[in-house]
Each structure stands twice: as C-alpha cells, then as structure tokens.
Image 1 (tube, helix red, strand yellow):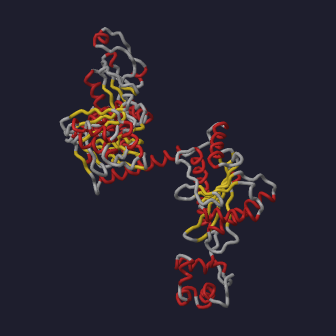
Image 2 (cartoon, helix red, strand yellow):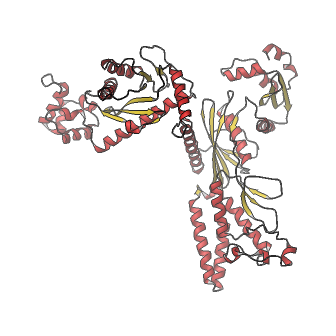
Image 3 (cartoon, one colour):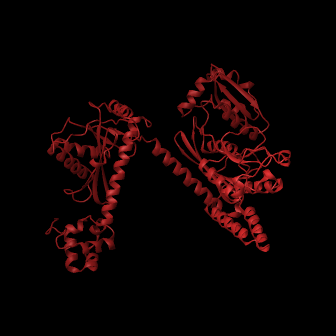
Amino acid sequence: MTAEQFSNIAGTIPLQPGIYKYFDSGGTLLYVGKAKSLRKRVSSYFSKTFVSYKTHELVQRIHRIEFTIVDSEQDAFLLENALIKQFQPRFNINLKDDKTYPYIVIKKEPFPRVFLTRRKINDGSEYLGPFTSAGKVRELIDFIRQYIPLRTCKLNLTRNNIQKGKFKVCLEYHLGNCKGPCESFQQEDDYEQGLQQIRQMLKGNLSPVIQHFQQEMKSFAMNLQFEKAEMVRKKLDHLESYQARSIIVSRHLGTLDVFTILKEHDTAYVNYLMVQNGTIVQTHTVELETRLEESDEEVLSFAAASLRETFNSTAGEIVAPFVIELTDPGILLTIPKAGDKKKLLDLSIKNVNYFREELKKRKILQLEGHSDMERKKVLYNVQQDLQLPVLPVHIECFDNSNFQGSYPVSAMVCFKEGIPSKQDYRHFNVKTVQGINDFATMKEAVYRRYKRLTTENAPLPQLVIIDGGKGQLGAAMESITELNLIGQMTLVGLAKNEEELFFPGDSESLKLPWDSESLKLIRRIRDEVHRFGITFHRNQRSRGTFKNELENIKGIGESTATQLLKTFRSVAKIKELPMEDIVAEIGASKGKIVWNYFHGEETGKQ
C-alpha cells in the first residue's frame, strides 16, 4: 500500500485506543500492533522514512488494514499479546520458546495421586506449575513422597469400595510410604492435610510443613513414642537442609516476578525469576527475535506478559530495570536502585548474560560431533566464500599475546577436516624481537613454523588465518616470501573487531554474513587460538619463565630486575625515571648501569 492509497482511508480510522492488523494481498496476517490513537499510529507507517529495512518491507506488503477499538491502552496491550501468541504474525516479535513444560498434577479423584505430567487437560484436576526443569520436578516429587506419605496406586478409592473391603494394603504401606487409605487406616481430611503441605512446598513456603512436623514430633515425645519422634526429627533435618539449598533472597520480600533484558541487533534475551515467599522457585531465560524497530521496553513488556501467562504467575509485584507496560494496572512495578530487590535484578542480569554466552557457544559451529559429509560441506562453503584454489582440509591460525605490554608470545592452532588437531598446536616464545612489536613477533612465529615444516617435508596447510588484520598479515607474508612459499598456501588476515577478512594486497575487506557456516568456523578457530595462547601465556607467567628486558642488561641479575619491577611496575615506567630514583632503589653501581642502558650513548643496548 502506498502513502497515496493510505490517504484515501486514513479518515476512516478511529482516534480511539485499540489494535490494528496488517494483511498482505493473500490475506495473510503480517503484523498486529496496539495504539493509544489508532489513526495517528497507523498513519506514522506511511508518513516517515524508516531506518529499518524490515519496516520498509512490511509497509510495501500491506494490502488491507483492520482495527479493533478497545476501552483503554491496557486492553489494547492485552489483546495485542493474545493475537500475537495465537497467530504469530511474520513481522511481530517472535518468542523462540516452543518447549512443553512439566506440571505436578493433583488428580481429581478420592485420595488424589500426585505425579508429573506434560499434558494439561481439562479434567478438573489441579495442575501446579509449569516448571522449567523436569529433573527438578522429579527431584521434588521424590522429596515429597519421602516425607509426605501419599498413595501411588491406581485403585478407585471411593468411599463405597473402601467400606466394602475391596482392597488390601500393599508393600508401600508396610514400608511407611503410604498410610493405607484403601483400608480406612487414613481418613480424607488427614490426606488433604498432606496435599496442603505439598502446595506450600511448591510455593517455596516450607514453614507450615516444618511447623506441622515439629508439633507431630512433640506429640510423639509426650506420648513416650520416642522412635516415631526420632523419625520425624530426621524428616525435619532433611526439610531444613532442603530449604537451605533453595535460593532464599530475603523472607520479607514475599512473592514477586523479576525480569531483565539483553538486546543485540535483532535478538533479545529475557530472564525471568519467579520469587515466592522470598525464595527463587523458578528461573527461565528466553530468546526473542525482533522484526521491526521495537524498543527494549516494548520487547520486555511483551516477554513479561507471555512468561507470566505461561508460568501462571499471580505475583502482585514486578521488578524490572525500567518502566514497562503491565497486563494489570493493579500490579506494582518496582525499579530498584539498592537493597534486596536490586540484588535480585543483578542476579537476573547475570543469568541472562550467561544464557546469551552459552547460546553463542552452541551456535558457533562445533564440528566434532558431525559426520564427515557435514564437515566436508562446511569446508566447501569456506572454499567457495574465500575463493580458495583447493579445499581447506588443513587450516592453521596464529595469534600474538602479551601481558601489560610485556612478555610477548605467539600461539598457533591447527584444524584438520574442520576439527581441532591438538597434537599439532604450537606456541612460540619470541627469540629475535626486542620489546613489544606485534608485526615482528608474527613474522618470527610464521617463519619458524613453516621453516620447520619445509625442513621436515611435512604437509603445508591450505589456509592460514592471521588474527590481527592488515599489519600482521603483511608481516606474515614477509616470512612466506623469504621461505619461497608464495602460492603454496593462502593467507588471510582477520580483523579483531569487525570480523573482516583481508587478503594480501587487497584494499577492500571481505565481509561474510554473520550467520554463515564459513564465518562460524573461522570464529571457532579464532576463539580456539585465543584460548590456547592465553592459557600458555598465563602458565608461563605463573611459572616465572619469562625474562623481562631488564635481565638482558649486563650486570643486572634476576633479583635486581624483579626488585625494580615490583617497585615501578613496568619496564616502560623505569625507562622514564631519572637516574636518582633508580639509584635510590638498587644502589649507585647498578642504578647507573640500568640508566645508561636506556639513556647512555657509551653503553648501548645489548
């Protein structure tokens, strides 16, 4: 729909709050939005230039507009969320969360059974949850059954059947796991008391359960039933231990929901902490895909409404990092600056960052578990994207590392058939370079590596990645030229920030799509050389195996060099000191030697 076509219908759109729906020529719902004033909001799509290509694409596809008037902005927000969830329009926020979550069901039947299920059906039973972890739910059910005797059989325990004596107690009764309602050894009100304790436990409120057992223990002790009292005491110990393992933030916090967001480009991550009675009973993080120019506030509002509905939250308070729209105007919104609620917010942020990093690790191509065919396919992609003359079945990558401008080292990792060949990893302590010189360090490492391979007649890699961009790539090419290896392998430089690839002599870089299989593999290799280099560097420092420049000065030993570094922190700082300061630290004789090494014409540098 063009702006001109829209102008013909603009006057028919109401000014009241409501939701609007965009359809394409085939009748497919493209987008659902809410507005304080429908006419103003919809008109904005046809009267401004959008930065986002996706928004421009949406407007081009609009063929028909429908709208629904509601009483308030709040109603518009609720209706928008419901329609997005129901129809999942192509251009709306997409909540990437298609899991089915487990529930604990209290079955609608005489003496109800309690068990885990993923199917929530309308049978009148009570469903508690859902829960984010099936493993946690099973652990919880095992814990419940250990301390609250409940039946597990499927007998039809109607009052009539029990009175007729149709059933006999089973082994579970003799083991103490069931109180025998099938033979009227347990009455319904006592059984219901156990169910009520379960409900309290699932809400994170163990106090009523603990109080019940404390009273029971005292009753047994007063009646001189010391063995039974001891059994209850053990239950109390386990309950209190279980409570200690729960994440209790602060008992006075009560029940609330915590939401935080982390947004990167068209992807957002939202973490949800469900707090009941001061205890975190659930934590869940979801990934959302934003399709237009949605703000953090819009995304978090949508996610919070969806998650609260999914997990049946009835909390009357929401903690968030900024103001968001709420499904109920009666809900209290808190944006904490300090205190326990701020700690909860920080914990939620920590969780959302962890989720993002873990997701990235999973998305970065891990070829170890893939078939040979799958690995070959990715390598063919690399060959095509980088226009390599041969398939890069052998790839090596170099990176330099130093510590606060001192102790330069280089690392090299090797990938064969798309997976790490760790026996071929190498590290290089720099031998020929004085001070910190990234280019010279790279040149030395590349020279030493391929000098060794050519001397041993070992196979050369088809692709060499130099981490660091044009300067380091040029230095590496100097070594390749000196070794007469031009044309026998392809070298590319990888810029650290933009993930651009540079080829020798090219003025323009190559930018691969950020989600391409080729770039994922290159990132994987780059991250591995970083890890290997940093680990080696850290180990070398911790063993004290690096020699700093001061130890190269004739007449200055390791202890004097260490003394100077402890006092003045770096060689660069020592170079700038007046002679008097150095003399005051290590004496006149050695002080003059050090100062003359850096400044004196007569001694020169070693």
